Amino acid sequence: MARANRIAILLPSLEGGGAERSMLNLANAFLGRSRDVDLVLCRAKGAYLDNVPDELTVVELEATAGIPARLLAAMANVRDLWVTVKPVLLAKKNAPEIARLHALRRYIRNRRPDIILSALTYANLIAIWAANTKGVETPVVVSERNALSTQCSTPANQRKWRWRYLPDLVNRFYPSADAVVSVSEQVADDLSVAAGLDRQHVTTIYNPVVDDALRRRAEEPLEHEWFAPGAIPVVLGAGRLVEQKDFSTLIRAFARLREGREARLVILGEGKQRHSLEGLAGELGVRDDVLLPGFVENPFRYMARASVFVLSSRYEGLPGVLIQALACGCPVISTNCPGGSAEILANGKYGPLVDVGDVAAMAEAIELQLDYPTARDLLLGRAEDFSVERAADRYLELLDGVVAGAGARV
Image (cartoon, rainbow, N blue to C red; front, side, top):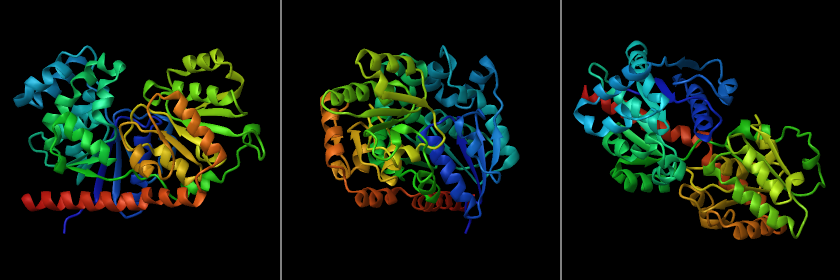
């Protein structure tokens, strides 16, 4: 029976996000199962480039400039010009992935992968458009990572054309994919409602997060006085310093916690809100107890030594950092945000859930976990549900099935 022997994994870049880390984990797992894997990047940049194994072929797609890139994207979908005219032809600024459409077509013709697995919405769209080109018969599986409705409706994204018309694009073109994968059931439900996609057309596969490498790296030493044995408890957050992660609520909750007890706060990650977050900590009088060290290559050794991990996001898909904290045995708290947090924590069984933006509830939950932390064995057991091995099994079953089905239609 035909199977997916040569897999192309398409990503916008290798910037430091959960989708990129998950896809790298999958790529490694596929290589370990005797599959050839090309990592196809719209831009070969990002913090995870150093984590790409030598056995993985990296392909960077060349950009087509300006108006020609828009025309190529529009002409790829002449019958649907009414859908693409505003977000593609008339947009003030296009998503950079659109400029790589022509190069992706050329890659498919030259390299002839058995299947394309893409992640993140605009990469998903150009994968579908490229595979629909005359003479190209490569099947496409797209992966959606976030709750689309919330992602597109944030004030910042509403001001950008690339987000404003995204549900219409998803609604029109995702059904053309050979399969659609969501990272949580809630993301699948949201995708169905927000984009009008048939819910039966969406398969949920949890992200590949936990493996032996994560466990080993959690045991690596951490030379920092805040994490020394017997030190003041540390509250930990991690993620890009952007609006979605809502670290301002975490800092406010921490300041409230500090009114009654000693504690410190560390937020791992980098982003455009750094200065405003540092300023907020200063305004609240806790700047000396808040550390923002930027992007760190090994966050797991911090998770293994923190007293509690807090996910403060406004929306997510399947937040990998929450699973990573569980795998490191760290007690966790999360907002009950759109996405997969409630699924991961089984509606509070593995850690408290608080409303998005609720400073008082978050401070109270942190204090509760500091005083009565969730049992370590319970956390570690739950983390195994999100292992790389389980995810690779599910993905390869799906990819092989799609390739076999495509071969049967030829």
